[in-house]
Image (cartoon, rainbow, N blue to C red; front, top):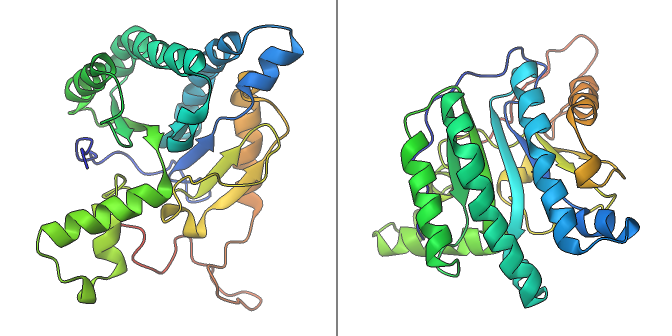
Length: 261
């Protein structure tokens, strides 16, 4: 289980009503292209362009940890031509955006199994992580060849190989062994394109996440939409399994060890 660098300590959310960590399932690139009678590759390129306004809105709002679901372990079943084009697009995008992200003090981390990626993409990922490893203004996680179930299995195997007695395994130990170890779990998970499922994304970490689904296709998603999602999040009552009477203080973080940051 090749890991990204340890996450640096970054500022917390600008105020308590904000999510500390937002995760986004970026869905709808293919449909966006099909509606315009364009090849799917055009939809993926348009989807890349949607990332910058979202990261800028996170910064403006004061949210400093963002995770984007770019490619799942199940996406290998797509046509080979589409997968190859995506892999090339990942390399191109990292190379193009890295200098600006580094200049903004963003630590770039990649979550997922790297063995199946091309050597060129693996080298690009390692280079980007190494260059931004010391940045402390924010964290951008890219879930690339990622699957929530396989992440948990790999983490348990790694703990067993390191000598941990799995009979004594607790939630905090397993949380630290995941790709997101050291980060707060996502408070808000956004899914575009209207599908109402989590698609094997951050299954452990999403235990207490708020879900926000929009019919907007990912290439059309932008800062305004993200702002609405954050505003909706701030208006929700988060009980974490508890019941609160009138006037009682409500917890702002889950009371379990699943939050390690």
